[in-house]
Length: 216
Image (cartoon, rainbow, N blue to C red):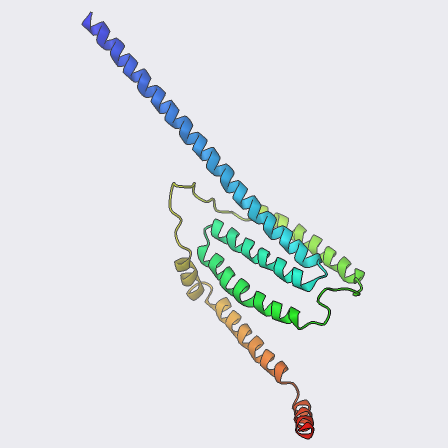
């Protein structure tokens, strides 16, 4: 009699433990589905911001609006980098492109005579060549996207993403040292070229100096 009661109690305890395990499994599965949906939603929102603002930048006739639309493109790209775990690249995107290059572009836009783009003729030939180049580039990127062995990100909460600063520094100073040095030389050449272009020809500078002295 007591043995039967004990066996029934043990069976009831096992059933309770089984039910708890199934409930916990279902909760985990539901949280994983919610996390995956949230990750996909964040990615698609950032991708829509990048593509929409880039398209507006390319096709807008107003230079000021195009420059400010480029701001959203840079921010969206930085968000994608941070979302994919490349925090250093994302922060560099904001500091260099948003804080430096975009400000220079805005200065250049402010010095143009026709900012609104009114009265300008559309270059149909350039548009055709641009669309052709875009189609060719898209056809080249499709097989690369399928051939490339993309790494899979860990699930949210399973493992903390490691910082990308140390691998970038090691790669730039070991495996990619030659491209890194070539890029630095190209930047130096561009800087020297900008200084030479800004100074202008010596004869032109001499004539401008004479005109300034005569005007005084």
